[in-house]
Length: 492
Image (cartoon, rainbow, N blue to C red; front, top):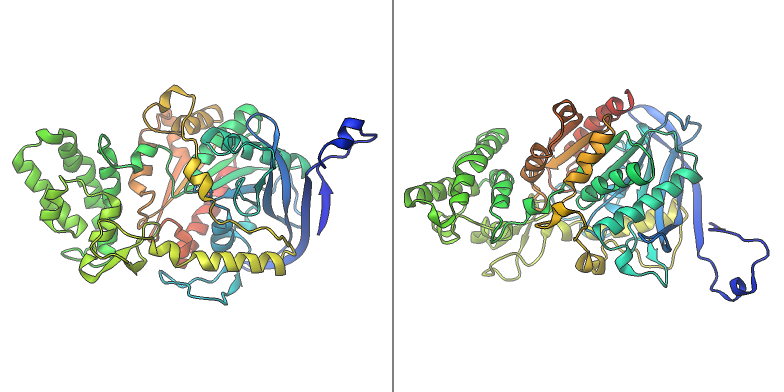
């Protein structure tokens, strides 16, 4: 693995000689081949680091990435997609090794991956047949590290993070001569608000236009996923997902098609339920009782429990209550997963079974792949999740529209309005209790786009969880939907 210095200066000054050595960028280049849909693709994999600036325009982080580029392709026509996960404080290993990289970890469906060894397979659902791919680990995650004198506050925040990713993408595009390539962003979870802020930052500050933005398991308005005192809206946005989960676990009074359950829950959530919630303590007794009865049917939870909850069952309590009679709890990221709780009488779950079932395989699978196939070796710990970044993240913004709860909807609206050809794909799992699809539906129905631009937003729904790719049929459908999306976004 060759190390390439970030900068070289001829005849350094005396002061420069006394200074600490310049941070080094590293790179490992390997060559591979894969067959996708009968098409053989020769590609180059580059695993390495780039030094990027912080929001104050100072060098502050060494950012790890893995790029896959098709050999011999015309870079002026070949798209390039920048991919990242969320958290905030999560590395890109999940999208990389679970969804769209050329090599994928073979996971069982909605079950624990168990212990090693874990299987690695060629990924027939990789996006490499549609685009070059650049997986980015956010500063402080994966192998990305803040430089010794960097201030974490310059990276760990909504706007700071967008600036850091913007600087990385500008450097990558410049170094690899990709300014005239069609460009896409693909973010999952917190990667979706990052995408909204980032595409606006790049188009406004970097004069870099994009063709498409792909949002998977999105949250742009954080009040839509935060039910609690003073915020009744989120109880309604969660309800269609909870009804779908109840259906999946056979806790409904009958078993109609999933689509019928979701349609019924949507109608109730946006109508009678929201009306009752908005009445607050003024809700008439008859309406209160009727609402509790309907909620009990949709949630599969005892009506008396719902009445005691004042019609407001929080998602963490729902996860615990749905299967309490068997001492089990359902997953937050993916409610298809089930686990046994440590404290069966607790109010909420002790852990997320869907996270516990997969995190070990992601870590072992990626580290084995990076060392043995990408020839990238590091003595650093690969951080799937940086808890410090999560716990200290700055959700405040200078913009006047964020005084109640953080929102990046105005950023996306501005990006889509100023670049009227920008297209957005919104992917959602029916069984995702972290970022429910009802929240995304509410956000995009209130985005305030001109009528002519609303058709530039496309939704895709999948019978899976937060990481929709953990269900292979859903991954196959997601890939098919994105293939059409790429064709539409690049045929303008």
